[in-house]
Image 1 (tube, rainbow, N blue to C red):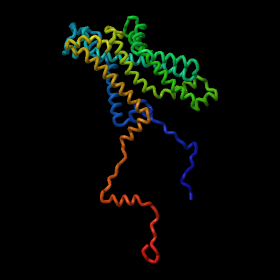
Image 2: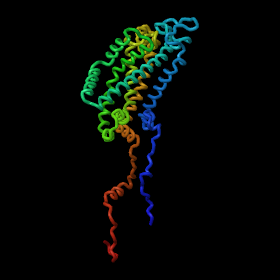
Image 3: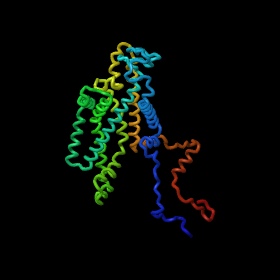
Length: 359
């Protein structure tokens, strides 16, 4: 008889390639999400997508420029109520509120992108070097990060903004100054995340093997250590994006942001509209405030959802909670019989005597 089982050879082993959509950070998390977690993630993605599209296509969506005060030779006026010419009214400076809100999304997006880009490159570099080499360099970097953590983040951003701008705020000057100010606050977070991963990965056997066979240190850092130490970066980036937006709004509200003639900024507009609220002028404060809340809410929902879905324990509990174990109903009339049958031990049936007498 021939055996139907064919021995497996090394050549017969095939490795299934994971599709690209299952490796992308947000797409893979969306496919794994269930129930309320998926609802939160989808809602956050929708709000964030609207924010991104509004910021990118601000020149096409905004009816006027961010510093425009007249149209067709007619001045807008100051603190004018919503009308056909100004759908959300005008500010105390005579600017169109709707245009300022739309252009403010573009300024916020530019600051977020610049701040996160600077923070990622600097934080990854310091975390990679400090975690891999250790020693006195690692201790100095850790002490510096602890010292930065000792200062309030908004106060540190204010000090850095004053030192960088020196009272001169242009469009890109203000954006870069604000981004660099936020970068100083964010670098310790990326440094700690990358350093912890690097310390774990450098003790793995494949890194030790690379050292033994003489692979250059630079190749080990980039090819082996860095590629396996950035898994949690998408979560940190999304959470820091909302914090960067709040820091930008805080700087603008306190008067250390970007001037109105240089760019539209939600925090600055909110600061200028504080006195209008007591006079019953609501249209100058509500639109920029709602824009800040919605943008932060969308980014935060995405970040928190990715954070939960990256934890296998939380993801398993949600999946288990969605599919409870089935419960079988028992007929009361047959319950005693089933109970006795369950209680009696299983065994071979008793054989009847050969002479026909009762056992």
